[in-house]
Length: 275
Image (cartoon, one colour):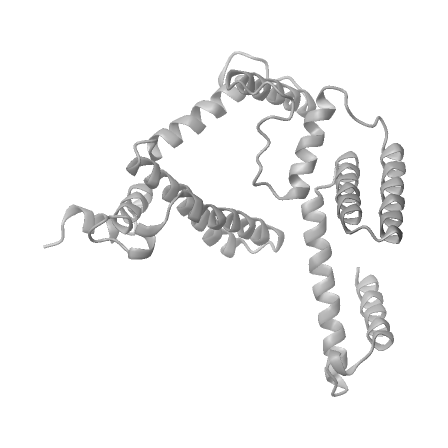
């Protein structure tokens, strides 16, 4: 006869308790899955990051059915970490939920407290940052740049670091000055290349990327999203080049740059006409 745990695992209406029980069973040292038992926070972290990107990808593609599945995968990551936390006596799923709930209530006094909702979005964002700064102070994060996650993608982390510095006035006042800095960094990269210094090229290339992230921030563009869009455009147009070559019985390696460049321009022109 099935026990209550088995009943819950196989109950399609079991909700969060069902998922928690599934994860508990997967991690059971005696009867669980050997792979799941062997994992720890560090080994699961890359999967957590990957699932967050897959959520973003489904949104970008506006594939809502896929988004439902990807959100489930991301939720599983939170449950996974919570189960490991419970096993180590650090925290559990309920404490994780309680902490984020408390945070949302504290950060929205205009919704859950007695502050007025009669504010602009910009004022509410400023209040949000003020509350976050107070939270960081409570965690003894004294420096302006403390607490910006190391695991963030480098472009996203650059923008966050720049935003933090901008809050205390360390920022170019206009986009034109950021553009000038971009040109300066590009010139320094070219100079390092002419000097033949691998170290110099590496450093100057990083500075150029940092300046590009700064320009994106000033132009209110998400650089990660912009680059993902550019990647998708490159794939789409290169696929069109491959299709055009296949139509005449050729593969890219049997072509040359001039021919492929012409086919690329043709694909680009067709896209412009269809816009």
